[in-house]
Length: 420
Image (tube, rainbow, N blue to C red):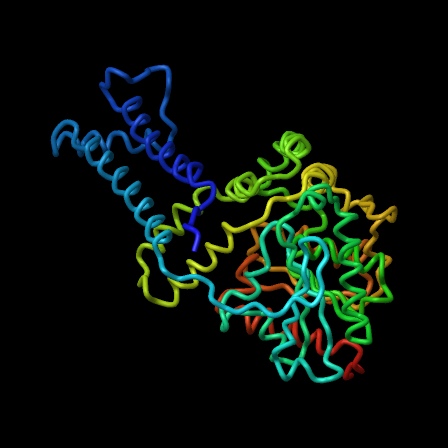
């Protein structure tokens, strides 16, 4: 096994914590009464100023410098706790051990994994085939982390036949792919599944994979029986909360991707970091308090491994996402062009299920909700709001009841007469 390198990029996570905590000590030296380094022209914020008299009184009772020493001890304690949490994760012996299903089709570094091949229920004639499309950034394993937390295996057990798109890592040719090239590859994968199943399969897209599958359904409507979208971004200007860094840095990052040929994993992880710079500090502190041999620690490690094992994004696709999607909002304004065709959701008549996790910080719910907007969204769509997060909708303890089951019910009901 390769040694773990997460959380990525580690210097950024450690530096964020160190600089923030160290600034507390610097601020105290600047603002404490009577300090030689204090700056009378630099007023403390109201919240700090309100505490200064109390802190000064504590110091008077405990002795000069006691508060500063306690502050230094607390900073050191927090840094040690963060470092210990990261080290405990890196040294944990747990790794994903599930056997992957057979690949039944491939093109370049992309494969189709047949999750129904080894499941007797899914192999029965007439079972609904589903083309499952994950994001190009984070790999597909989040849909199949453990035997108990595997949406794909649950679908097969239900009698559906999932064909998962494993994008792999872009090779030299794929590093030149834009969204048109990726959707064209999906079209060929869809054609293979349709021929194998002898009827149009359903298509399910998760996150960025959902955005791509909207284009797929628009371009090949006769080959798609229905479209299930899980946290699929569409209107990138509907809610920019938390995305300021991504939007502002987008053009520069796109230029870098042009020059390098791809957007590296650590840069992509930095964009995720910008959504919540303190997330690593909080979650590795919690991890350290877990039973390291327990199920919660196992699930944490497997999920963290997945988060840190992403793939670089092909240069042209990175530019399209950063500038065309987040910058210009091409999908949300019906100006996204794939293979010479504008992708207009309102022209797609196929049945669709749009699942929107209300706690999503990666894809704002308003962005995904544009796909069910009465005027510009999918014309035959069912909306399902979930009290879950972006990742929690597929792996949390409540995912089976709140997400998996209604998703499978909907997929299983495609083409069947609806009860009145």
